[in-house]
Amino acid sequence: MRYLDTSSLVALYYPEDKTELLLAHLRKHPLPLVFTWLQEVELVNGLHLKGFREHASAATVASTLDALRADVEAGVLHRKQPSWPAVFATALRLSAAHSRALGTRSLDLLHVAAALTLQATEFVTGDDRQSRAAAKEGLKVARI
Image (cartoon, rainbow, N blue to C red):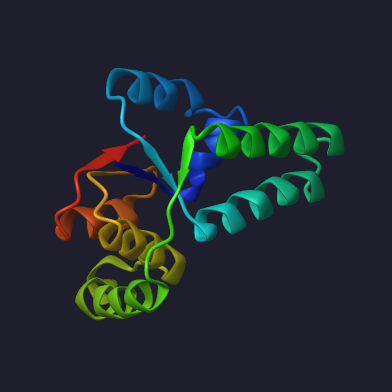
C-alpha cells in the first residue's frame, strides 16, 4: 500500500512541475493508493487555496474535486482510516525522536504516523524533512 503526502496528492490531481515524474513512478511501481480523512482535508483545502490565490479558476477546482470524488468512488483511492489515537501517539513519539534534528512540522509527522499506523509499504513525498523522518522510521520513501 502506498501513502502519498498531500503535495503529491495535489500533483496527482492538479498539474504541477512534479506531476509527470509522479505519474511515471506510479505507473512503474503500481501499488494501491491509501486515502485517509487527513489527506482529503489537506487536499481539498489545498485546491481551494489555489482558487483563493488565483492559481486556479473556480471551475478548475470544481472539476478537480469531481475527479477526486470519482476516484474515491471507483476505488482508485482506497479509503482507509487508521486508529487516530494511535496516529497522534505515534506523531508525538516522532516529534520527540526527530523534530529537534530534522525540523519536521506537525502535519508532516501526522502523515508519517498515519502511514506507519496503516503499515504502508511506500511513502511518497517531495518534502526533504518529511522524507528523512519517514526513512528513519523504516518507511520506503519515494522522493518526487
